[in-house]
Structure formats: structure tokens, C-alpha cells
Image (cartoon, rainbow, N blue to C red; front, side, top):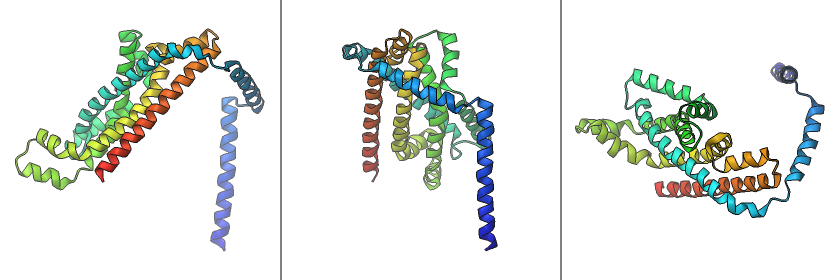
Length: 259
């Protein structure tokens, strides 16, 4: 009975603490319900201004959409290859303690840096354009794929690695003949998932100078061409859904083949 009463009191205290934290957070951010209501009203009016989309613009959106797709694919391919190399040093069953600690720390640091910040640095170095976006997407893969690839490599049975070492296999042979066949389906699955993310990122990066459909979207909004902006958004939606469906199909096939 006392335990039940104590739990109820703790729940009430936790709820009141949550309300208190929420209140102070709203005060710190200047959040006001009146502003929220006004924003919803203005946002709905803005959305009505975008309809109907300008259907004649879709033909001119194909090339920018393909450019965005190319940016995402190339950035993901290069990023996956780089992440795999880094993951070999981050996996505890392939590297020593200090190398593992250093590379894992590097991966964690990279994961904390937004792709937008990376792009701004690359724009300063290489200027606006596709090259900066591709490099930003490639570097952005390291934080996510480097960790996932390393974790997948570490799941390789120790007995397999030890038996290959005992037979005189070099580290490259162990990686190529022992580890890679075991983790390859996982690597492809993770890379496809990252591709889905990079499609969205490439749209955002395009809006700040990388080109593609993101640039078209930003241009339409800046010129108050709201119907054209909606056409761009629809093209982005088609692109994202198409890649997600293709990625899901490939991952499903990989799972079936594994079974």
C-alpha cells in the first residue's frame, strides 16, 4: 500500500516538474500561444496562395531533380567507401585499443557537426556548386555510416577471424574473404538508408548554392512564384518517395537472400 502511494506521489512530482520545465522553456524562447495561432492562420493563407501548382513547370523541373539525385548518389557512394575504410580502423576486432579509441572519437566528433556547416566551409574553399555539395554529403556520411559499419564489422564471429589468422591469412585477406562477405548485406542496407537521408539533404544544400531542385525551390520562393514553388515541392516529394520505395525493395531482397 505504501509502495503504491509512493509511486503515485513520484508520478505527480514528475508531472509537475515537467510542467515547470516546459513553462520556463516557453518563457526563455519567447513562445506565445497568440503568436502560434496567428502563425497557423497566416500559414494556411500562404498555402492557399500556392495552389494550384503550375503544371507547365514540371518539364523544367526534371533536370534539376536528376541533378539532386546525382548529388545524393555520388555523395553516398564516396561517403560509403570512405566510411568503410574508416570503419576498419574503428572496429575493435581489427585494430588496437588506441587506434580504435582515436577513430571512434573522430567519428563521434564528425557526427556532431551539421552538414550545413561543412558545406559553408567547403563553399569558402571551393566556391558554390556541385563539388562542395558532394564533398559535404560524403563527409557527412562518416559520422553515421562509419559507426554503423564498424559495429557491423565487430559482429563478425571472432572464431572466423582467429581461424583465418591461424591459417596465415593477411589482414587484407581476412577483410576481403572473411569479413566483407559476412557484413556486405548490412553495408548495402545502411548505405541505402543514408541515401534516403542524403536526398533530403541535397535539396536543402541546393537551396544555399549547390544547385538542383533545392535551388529551384529557393528561387521560386524568393521571386514570390508560389505556384512554381509548389511544383518544386511536388517534384521533391516524388523524388523522395521514389528513392524510399526503391531502397525498401532492395533491402527486402537482401533480407530474403540472407535467409
